[in-house]
Amino acid sequence: MPIAKISGVGAYAPDFILTNQMLSEMVDTNDEWISTRTGIKERRILKGKNKGTSFMATKAVDELLKKTGIAAESVELLICATVTPDMQFPATANLISDNCGLKNAFSYDINAACSGFLFALHTASKMIESGAHKKVIVVGADKMSSIMDYTDRNTCVLFGDGAAAVLLEPSEDSDGIKDAILHTDGSGWRYLHQKAGGSQMPASHETVDQHLHYVYQEGKKVFSNAVVNMAEVAAEVMERNHLAAKDIQWLVPHQANMRIIEAARELTGIAIERVMVNIDRYGNTTNGTIPLCLWEWEHKLKKGDNLILAAFGGGFTWGSIYLKWAY
Ligand code: COA
Image (cartoon, rainbow, N blue to C red):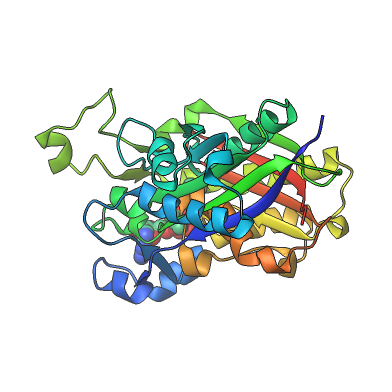
């Protein structure tokens, strides 16, 4: 059976730029604090009434279809990784498929918080490996500004909006998605979640008044788990595939905090110039970070390059994927 390869990337980042300076006029913060603690300088925000995550994801998938030249009708499956679906149901993936004319695709969402893109990529690659499907799109997209409390300096400086999509097809050679290690520790739910709006605590006047529809995070606890787990899982996937730091052309880490990225770089021993970093310009776009990096660095990637993708997120969820770039 052939393995799955990524054969294209498309993305969309909204035009509006929210800078650290602008945030310092909204909450008690400053550029120095945000820059040194997180590495973030600015983030993109999706403006406009009734524009949800699917608006950005649709643009990313449209660009992907255009760049790869494949017909919308030939796509068999679309998986959307998101924590900010347009609606509770139906799946945002369905809205994207409809917008993009994927008439013959089935589609669904995956929610694994910041690790969602990796969980979806793994699932999609197995759909190809099994022989069940030949053209699968994975899109990671989040409108984090829709669940941000812009009166809470602890969280509102960290996140931004964005979307990016990859096409998966069977590989003609041995370049493609080689290995994945994924983890969940459900006990971590308490440190990072959205309290209200689900079936446990449906929306009410009280939940709105108490700001319970926003991201709740115990930053230090999340940080200490992320720093260890993202680094260790990246090192583990390298070791399992007999890869030394010198064998890796690119480390593609989830962009939550520059210090978490640095910890993964240090443990894996990969040189800083081999690490994709765009957190300074986008912040944490949750499911968007890893494919947005692939999109930005696409022109530098060469066939046969070894890439290590790694993420940590709410859930807790974390994981790493080893792939050989295929074009
Ligand atoms: N501006 C200024 N001060 C801020 C601030 C801001 N935007 N946000 C928090 N602070 C203050 C806090 O109120 C606290 O003050 P206190 O000590 O007087 O109570 C202090 O800064 C916290 O400092 P510290 O605990 O040293 O911060 P930190 O080094 O833990 O960094 C985070 C905070 C949120 C940046 C960090 O914990 C983090 O990145 N966590 C993980 C976030 C993440 O990745 N989430 C997504 C899942 S992948």
